[in-house]
Amino acid sequence: MGQFRCRKAAGFTMLEALVAIVVLAFGVLGVANLLIKSFRFAQQSSYDVVALQLANDMADRMRAHQLLVDGGAFNLDTKLGTPQVSDADNLYKTACLGASTVCQPVSAAFDMAEWSRRVTTTLPGGRAIICRDIGTWSATTGYEWNCSPAANPTNAPLVIKIGWISRFNDSGDAGTPDGTKADGSATVQIVVVVTPGVSS
Image 1 (cartoon, rainbow, N blue to C red):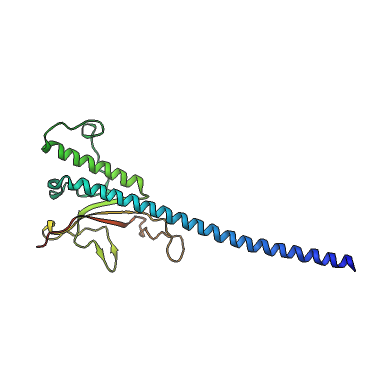
Image 2: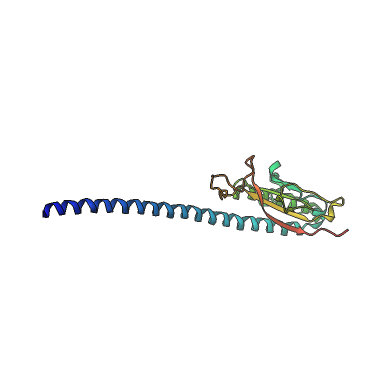
């Protein structure tokens, strides 16, 4: 009789242990999913900070060259390629010692090339556009890459748009990043207004 009780108790304890292991496994999977999503939030946050710093840096550089900005020298779309400078115009290698009328265009071209390289290398699928745009944001589509200058371009705000491929999944968690369009390109995620438009 005593042996029968011991065998019955031993079998019941094994069943409890198996149930406990299954429950623990579900808990560990839940924690792992939470850690992955936490990492994505932290990474997205770091990209937000980097992009905002890049946009503000270029805005300050542009304000230092207002005449060139008005002439459209800073218009840019990195999707069309990043600007290149020769060694003679590379301000890290050769200082510009000419008059301001000579050095300012060289400095602006260098700023564009160096900044574009930083956008495309520090952000995944990074893209930037600098343009005049009267319709930067729409209630139906949000931010768009397209630029719509006014009839008189100086009436439209001068903006810097930066986007990259997001690490977030869509709401259905199907693995498709929200920050990616159907063609695999990045969406606009940060817009900084360099100069407001002039009222006509």
